[in-house]
Image (cartoon, rainbow, N blue to C red; front, side):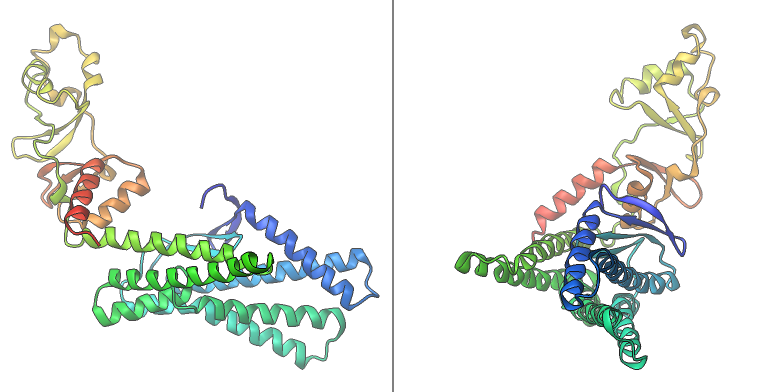
Length: 374
C-alpha cells in the first residue's frame, strides 16, 4: 500500500500505518469520548477524551491481533509475512505467497476471525465476570462488541474479506483449481460491494441522509479489490504449466568467449544493434558471464584483434539466472521482487538456453488473454 509509514516490527513482521488510519483514529476517539461524556457526566472533558483514545487504541489493537492471527498461521506453513498495515478500513497482512493446499488456505483465512471471536469472549468475560462498572465496563463492552462485529463482517463470503478466502479455499477443494476459487469468491465479493453501495446511496438519494455513507465507502473498497483479485487470478491461470524456457527470446544475444573483440563487433554487435548487454558462453554452451557494449571502451581499438571477449567479460551473478524448468509464475515473482527486466535462462547443467525478458512475458500474456477471454 503506497504512502505508508513504517513504525517498527511486530514479532519480526514489518508494521506500517497508512495516513488514513490517523483520520479514523481521530474520528473514533472523538466519537467514543463524546459517548462516554454523555453517558457519564461526572467525567471531565479531558478524561473523557483520554478514555476515548484508549478505546480507539484497544479497537485498533484488536485489528492488529486479527491480522497477527493470519500471519502466525501463514508463518507456520512456511510463508513469509511481508508486512502488516493499518489503514482506513482496518488492517491487512501481506503474505509472500499463497498456501499450497486448500486446507492450509482455509486455516490462514479463518485464523483472523477466530482471534476476534476469542477477544470477544475475553472482553465479555472480563466485563461481566469481574464486576467492573462505570466507564471501564462501557469500554470493555464496546471493545467486545466491535471484535464480534469484526469477526462476523470478515466472514462475509466474498473477497477480499476473510470469508471470501474461506470460500476460495472451498471452491479450490471442490474444483482442484485455486484460480477458479479466487474468481468465484471475487464475484461474490463484487455482489456484496454493490449491495453495500446501494445501502449507502438509497438513503442519500431518497432522504438526503448520510447515515450509511460508510457503507458506500466499504462497497467501493469491496468492488475494487474483488475485481483486482479476479483479474489477477485470470492472469495467473493463463500462465499455469509454463516455464522460463517457454519465454526465452528467439535469437537471444549470445556470443562465444573465444571471439576477438573485432569479430564480436563485426559479426555480432551489428546483428543485435538494440542490445547493450550480451551473454557469453564457452564451446559447450555453458554460461560464463556477460559483456556490455561499454566494456569495449576499456580496450584500445588497435588491440581488438588480439583481445578475446573472455578477457573483458564480467561474471554473472546467480541472482541474474533462472533454471529453465522453473514455473513462469515464480519467475515473474522474482522479476518483481528484484526489480529486474531480464534473466538468463540456463539448464541444470549450466548450458545457456537464452535470455528471458519481462516484456516478452507481457506480450505472451496479452496474446493468451486475447485468445482465451474470460
